[in-house]
Every structure is written in structure tokens, then in C-alpha cells.
Amino acid sequence: MPAKKGSETAAAAKPDSKARIAAKPNGKVPKSNGRGRTPPAKVATRPTEKLAEGLAREIEREVIEQGWPVGTVLGSETELLDRFSVSRAVLREAIRLLEHHGVAGMRRGPGGGLILTEPNDQAVVRSVTLLLEYEHVTSAQLFEARMAIELNAVELASERITEPGIAALREALEVELEAADQLGPLPDPSLDRIHELIAEATGNPAMRLFVAVLGQLTSLHAMPSYRTGSARELRRQALGAHTAHEAIVEAVVAGDSALARHRMLRHLQAIAPWVAAGPGAPAPAARRGRRTTSD
Image 1 (spheres, rainbow, N blue to C red):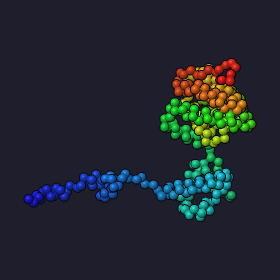
Image 2 (image 1 turned 180 degrees about the vertical axis):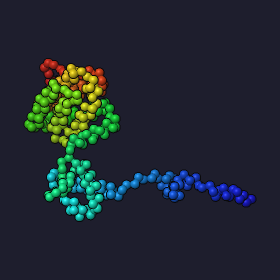
Image 3 (image 1 turned 45 degrees about the vertical axis):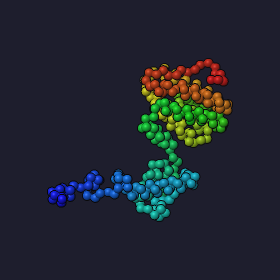
Image 4 (image 1 turned 90 degrees about the horizontal axis):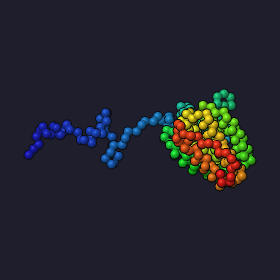
């Protein structure tokens, strides 16, 4: 029996369900990805930005291959335009990226051009610290990382310490003791400087960077306890840390890696609860009396 005319009209007017779902405002249906699904729309990127990112990476690779000779002029804007065959807009965007990354900066005037600069490690430390704060790193995770890195760092420092390194550690201890008697409204960076110097004594730049990041994170996590603690409690905490630092430095200078590791472990275990507990937690007291080889 032939289909009714009304049914034919309804069927013709009713679009395919897949086409209806995938239809665009312009009436075009995007192609399927072969698995029955329509791929998500891509966010448009300006060609200038994409080209600039590629150019910036190319220049960064060259700088690294050349050994990063700070102060070297890579060329004037005109020379760089000729060399890389890009538009002025692309070059200037690439230079902006290089300046942001601390690789190079443009200096105007005679003898100027794109000049290689020394990266600002503190800016890097701050950026990584903020990233980890954004990731909501916990105090437990923070000290888990400190244990993994700093226990190895203090062992290596004991094996590799140099005379300049020893002098730097001893000077830092003196500054630290003075800072403990002049505590301000915010934690004094010198109170944690010993940890960075020990990492620096390993000769491993990556280890020094990681310890610096973890030190800044510790200061941020300790702020509740620091702000609510009494002046007496804070001074006890600072003196307790100083006493522990003296013991650690003593072992490092003596080249006793096992003892240095043991003392660093005890120090980190002592400060972790105070940092994690927040307001009202008692500060670890300074230990008194003669240290033994097992301390």
C-alpha cells in the first residue's frame, strides 16, 4: 500500500537526528571523527602568536647551545628581521616572550639590540611556589618532598663541601642568630638560608632550586602559626632552628654524611608539626646542653 502523502511530508520535514544535533548555525554539519562523534571546536589562535612562540623557542635553543653567553648582542631589530624572515609584529612578540622568560632583552640606541640576560632565579622560584599553592599542596606533601630532597642534599654537601662553602655556611649562621633576636611581622628569609646553602654546596643547581621553592612554601604554610604565636614562642622556634642548623653544619663541615643526614631528619621532623598545625601550635624549643655524636 502506498504511503500517505501526509506521512511523506512529515518524514521529509524531519531531519536526521545526528544531523540535527551536530548542525551549526550556518547550516553546515561538521565531519565526524570516524567514531560517531563530532570533534570539539578548536579555539582559534592568531598566526602571529603561534609564529612568535616558535621563533622564541628557536632563539632559546640557540642560546642554550651557545652556553648562554650573558651580555652577547644577538642583533638589532633590522638584523633579526632579515635573519629570521618574519614580520615586525612576530619578532616583537617573540622578544616580549624572551623578556618574560628572562632570556634576553631589547636595548635601544647605539650598540643596542637583543641582548642575552641572566635569568632571575627568584622569579622562577616565586612562579613555581605560586603554582604549587594553586595546586593546594598540603603541609604533609611539602615535608614529604623536603625529606626526599634535603636528606640527599645534606649527604652530598658533606662529600662535596668546599672552603668557600664552609665560610658561607658559618656566615649564614651568624646572620641567622642576629635575625632570631630581631623578629619582625613576617618570617625572615635568613632563618632558612642554611638549607639553600647546603643545597648549593652539592654543586647541583636543580637541587638548589627545588630547596629554595620548598623553603618558600614552608614559610607560607607557617604564616598562621607565625602570626598568632607570641614573641616568646617565635623566638624559641627561631633559636631551636638555629641550634639544629649549627649541628647540621658541624656534621657537614666534618664530612660526616651519615650524621648530617640524621640531624637534618630530626630537624625536619621537629618543625613539620608546627608548620602543619597552624595557629596555637607550640613552637619547638631550643635544645640545650652538649650535643653527642648521635644527636
